[in-house]
Length: 303
Ligand code: 13P
Image (cartoon, rainbow, N blue to C red):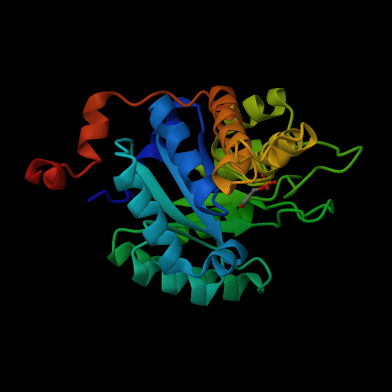
């Protein structure tokens, strides 16, 4: 049976060696398979994550875990896979820890800092007892084309001292499509934070639509995990639109209406877009020794 790794070594190595590893949101079966395929074909580690909304849509955190795990087995995935809860609240973080996710993000940005820190510590204790990785958010990532809130160096130090494994920072980044005239990432603040917490992998949320040179600069300064969702949704949408505009869905003799055909171009577009992002991030392929160590081969030997 396949299993999940917590990714701490993977991201620490990325921070040290100045590259990033992608963290991709799953939205359904096709997404899950497209992401696993992209990781396997590039021989790179994969962090697959689910937001609270996507988990609700799909049928809950257990269903998501089973889907990813069973897909890994069905597809003979041999690269390391991390399963992460994205932007979890307190209850969902605890639920995912108990279910066996290998990583959780506790997003307490809406709470007063003291309370956020106290709750983060509780989550860290529960998670670390089970070998699970924890990500926290400082400042605020922007939403719906609106600016967020800049993370402070003080908060970075406090959350790292509390024991977080990865730190998401508000540095001008925004979830979703960036608005016209976006002023770009705040590299000065990123540099200050990176210097204050020199070993902690820093996370860039809202990784879709940021120009390549800014992605590269952010990585050179300490970003080692980049969260991407919208980019693949747009790739899926564009390919699906093309299929329909070409009338292929209406071709009854070829059963173009069959969801397995209708969703295929979009699914393939996710993998293609993922491969492009992997090349931007400079994620190196793992060697076979690392892959073997992260994959339980006992069930294969039984066959
Ligand atoms: P985008 O959808 O903007 O890529 O952001 C993804 C993300 O940060 C998930 O946490």
